[in-house]
Amino acid sequence: MYWDVGINMITHNLVFLHPGWYCDEDGLLAPKGKCSPGFYCPTGSTSNEQIICPAGRYCPEQTSVPHRCPAGTYSNDTRLEMATECRNCTAGFYCQQNGLTEEEGACTAGYYCPEGKDDKISLILVFF
Image (cartoon, rainbow, N blue to C red; front, side):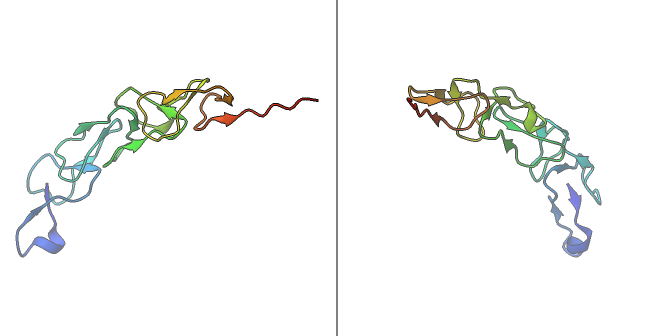
């Protein structure tokens, strides 16, 4: 928490600003620091490790809202810091949605599902 000097000097209201930052004491003129990687700090955070980044998401430094692992990946681990830490969907499975904590399903007959892909690929058999 800190004072928004430009706006609230007259009203003396304590305000919460700067998502992704934290304030660990009252009366500061600026945020104390950035949220640590692997954690997220919504507006009003009082610690640089306010909330652990949940499974299926990653949180780089100064995150206020966790980012979802991209389609084609998943993660059941917490405290990820980068999208590259999300696991590629295993060959033979598909991961179409963002933010998955496990693979969505096995590839069905007539489709090909390579590692890290976000969609099933239809197999077209050509006979000569």
